[in-house]
Image (cartoon, rainbow, N blue to C red):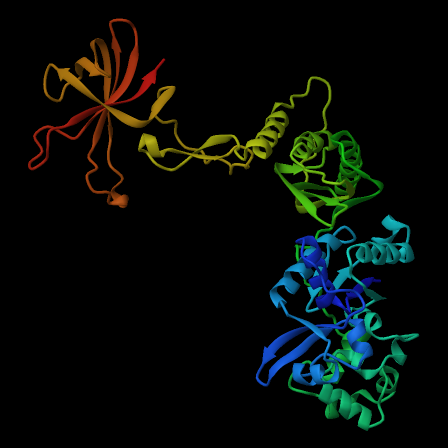
Length: 500
């Protein structure tokens, strides 16, 4: 059964404003004095949020500021900052990921979490809820927590006091005010009274055009008849390891010990499922409420703890622990079927070693090894293209062996000057890189025609030769163009590679 939690911050705008003032070194409103945040509207300034002292004098959200000042002249006010409220709420969501990777904002003053299978990591549901309240109180936020099998039930139990779902007021269904008033006029004041009515009758009477008016949809969501998805800030993951620390850790040695435990746990879970991690994120939660994220990637799906530690440990050196790290989470954001290798006597594991070396280079320098992949082209410089070295290549089609190519081919052919006995004959003297060489042997030509389907302007046929000079050095060069072509410029020579 799913376990969902709703956090409601009844004083969120005011408490967020006070916390921001304290963090920025500015003086917050004095405790015990009535205070409100105001916002301009069509009919002037109105109260958006009030503190407990202001409420004790009868002030409430939505009142006109002029009426509130007439009732309480000493009321202190400040402009409401809705963008700062939302940014702070998102920051709290990211901080709450220490309890679950499935966290979503419930604007303007709430957070939703899916904690299914998580409470045992914190000593049970009661201890986890108590820790949430305590930590949030340390940051200056009062909170009410509801837990249920559906989002609707958790949301309602956080905002309304009730022994069970059936005794909740109809307002707990998250319907608009008009629908709630209509239900109360009909004597339907609780969720239990709605459940006692035949479903068909309820559907005919309260099928509104919007979800806030449709009582039946909200009732089904609360009771679990209709699924209501949770849209977390981060993509959901099935593999996660978490450690909550009794005391904050500052030194890298202590963080490495915790990391080793997280990696071993995550790799066990991945191996059981026949999976490996392609993308990880290590989250370190500081005691001041901030968080450090350390991403890591792998060329092939990995569940080897030793390799994973070699990739992640150097990243800890870049972390500023501040006043200490009190929780760490390791999540596998992307997984794939694992490549299982069984090592035995005289077994070659060089491929795996190269992949692991590639992962270490990639995560340190954000660059990886590349290999050359065959491309269907008879133009030498187009016959290969770089690719990530760990990507599996498709099987090569069987085809006749092509003419031998030199060991070294230049990325771009280099211009040269050639002297031949006859204009279209083999080279007798080569001048390349300002050095002239006498040719003693020559083999060719090999005709390479342009790729007509590319329709590339200026491409001409090539005649390739392999030559050897008086010192035994071999060159692979070609003549571009043919002698005697009407309207064409004279052929040009290029050195394209070196032969053994």
